[in-house]
Image (cartoon, rainbow, N blue to C red):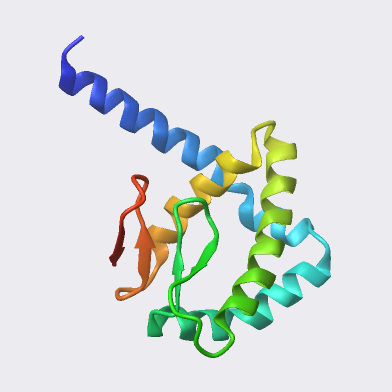
Length: 130
């Protein structure tokens, strides 16, 4: 098979996998413990502010990562990541995949939806501003 065709097929397979894994995030969040939804919603404005300032970034595993511990960024990231972990586990159980696969798929979705200027870690581990 031609190298370009292999590359295309891999990219297509990755996109299909992403759709099947990442699509249930919203549905699963709605079905999750209401306390998780509430906590995540309440944290979002502060997380967005810290991502815009560069204190937090989105890593390639679907979790927040502290880049500069200003304004209690580490504590906020830890709380958010604990809730994300619970959501990824619920999705993984429902989709019969691993939580790591869900997190990686979610990381790609987050990267696409993030605002310009947010620090994003690519699949190879390199950080760059979107």
